[in-house]
Every structure is written in C-alpha cells, then in structure tokens.
Amino acid sequence: MRCLSHPLLRRLLSLSPQHVPGRWSPSEAGVLSPNQLSLRQSCSAGPGLLTATDTVNYWQKVFEINGIPEARESSQYIVSFVLGAKTFQSLNSKSLHTPLTAMQQEQIQQLSNRRLERMPVQYVLGEWDFQDLTLKMKPPVFIPRPETEDLVSLVVEEESQKCAHSGPCFPVPVPHPVILEVGCGSGAIALSLLCKLPQSQVIAMDKEEAAVDLTRENAHRLQLQERIHIIHQDVSHSSAKQLLLWGPIDVIVSNPPYVFHEDMASLDAEILCYEDLGALDGGDDGMRVIKTILALAPSLLKDSGSVFLEVDPRHPDMVEHWLQAHPNLPLTLRAIHKDFCGKPRFLHIQKQSR
Ligand SMILES: C[S@@+](CC[C@H](N)C(=O)[O-])C[C@H]1O[C@@H](n2cnc3c(N)ncnc32)[C@H](O)[C@@H]1O
Image (tube, rainbow, N blue to C red):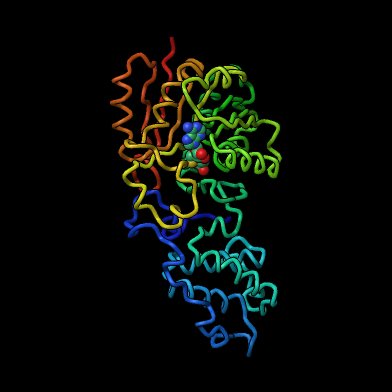
C-alpha cells in the first residue's frame, strides 16, 4: 500500500504555510543536471550495471543537490513505480539487485526530471492511493491528503452506528444512505464511501470540469459508476433544486477549499505551481464554501441528517460562532474530531429534527 504515511512526505503537500520564500520557478532555480553527478561511480552490480538501489541513491543525491524536498522518498517512489511496485520496501531482493534495463533507466530519468521541476510525486506517477483505492491523478486536480482518510472513516462510522440502532436495516445492518459530496476533486472521498458503504449512493459535485472528468474516470476504473451521480456545478444557494432530484440527503461531506487567503502565498512550491488554487483558497476567513454548504444543508438534509467537514484548526470556533449568529439555520455542532497530528480538523454538524 502506497501512502503518505511518512511524516516528511506528508509535509511535501502540507496545507499549513511552510514559509517558502515566494513562488518557486524551475527556470530561476538553475537545476543541476543529473549528468553532473557520476552515476557510474556507484554501480554495485559491476561496471556500467545499475541496480534499483544504485539508482535510488543516485537520484536522491540529484534531488538533494537541487533542493528538492523529500529527496529519498521521491527517488524511491519513482524507481519502485518503474519496477511495477508501490513502495521500495515491497521490492524483493532479486528486484533490488538485478541491473535495470536501458528502458527502465530512461523512464526513471524522465519521471525524475519532472520531480526536479517540483512536480508533486503523485502527479509524476499519475496515480496515488487513498484508503484502499488507487486513483488516477492529473494536474491541476487536487491531490487527496492522508488526513482526509479520517473524514471518510467518520462518515462510515456514523452511518454504520445509525443503521445498527434503526429498524429498516434489520436483520442485516447495512446502511444505505444518500450522500452528497461538495468538491469531489479526484473522487477520493466519494469513491471510498461507495466502497465502504456498498448500499450507498453518492452525488459528487465540483465546479471544475477537470475534477468531474477525473472523478468520472476514477469511478469507471474502479467500476463504481452505477452508484455515483457526478455533477459539474458551483455550489450555491440555488443548488438545492437539482441536488434534491435524488431525494432528501442523509449526509453531506466536504473537504472544501479552507486555506485562509492570506496563507496561500506561503504554501509549498509543489502546491503553488501545480495544484488548482481554487481547490485551496477559502477566501479571507477560509469559510467561503463552508458557509454556502451550511446555508444549503437544512433544505437538503433529512431530519437528523449530518454534515461532515474537513476544516482549518481555527475553524471549529469560527463555525460555532457563525451558527450562533444564524439561529434560523436548524443546525447543531455535534462534535469536533482531531486529525492524526492532534489538530481539530473535522466537524460533525447535525440538522435538528422537527
Ligand atoms: C480541497 S479540494 C478537495 C477535493 C477532494 N474532495 C479531496 O479531498 O481530495 C476542494 C474541491 O472543491 C472544489 N470546489 C471549490 N469551490 C467549489 C464550489 N464553489 N462548488 C463546487 N466545488 C468547489 C474544487 O474544485 C476542489 O476540487
């Protein structure tokens, strides 16, 4: 299983400002050519014969010299990918010590050149794992982050518990919710939910054509297209009519753009140069899309239906105050959940029952 579980690699795409001095441009950086290092110096399989281990070490050095973050992990992911494996650790001893073919070396060089231009490794490989799924990745569609896997788990837990306590699922407790995802990106959340909740239906919407196209492609690759309705639309107060075509909704889930506008400039170069900034920029208070979702939720949700949101750690208090200032919205903040770094990251908001 390939994942961003390594803390350094997580940092590669962290949404927290990293104090990058300005916008990075490959042309300004004066990239050192790999030829400036002697690859042949470190051949362990004999003169001119390069193994996977030699190649990982070589590209790690090239990345380090050129100031590419997470040099070793980047090099390992690229070499493993070309050898048909997800991680370097999963390569067996034979694969590690067999000399690479000229074609494999050429492919590694091409992919590594993209990494030298600060392209995120997920775009370089063209695929990445989210929960148990391997998803196609294409710039500039947002790359799913590891913390978002916990957002999916919260929805699955809530639906499974609800089902265990209610009659219609008896005697087999299988939840069958209608779920709306606002801002589906590559389809990571929507498709994971369809897998984990095999009786669910998901409406996945995104304002970007590239995102809905990628969600559709990933749904087909995973053969999940029968239970997903993909809508190309900007969420707004007037979205309710179209979204209610599938009936009242049990759960709204979203990892919306939530970065405060003033923090955008200090994101990593990988993000600023390659990802759609509209997927990240939440406006002055990071709450532009969050507020739209909350304003829309009461008219879409069934009684006691839920909204699950991934947010910035400053947002739980802000959302609570915003809900207090909007008593006309029958919504209650039920729970705040922390991410794997201990930061308040996920909100569970519930529609009050009449
Ligand atoms: C942070 S990304 C999340 C993508 C995906 N759900 C994930 O977690 O990997 C936010 C997504 O919301 C979409 N988005 C932003 N504003 C939107 C709006 N007003 N209406 C619909 N989608 C929007 C962006 O295009 C982007 O795909």
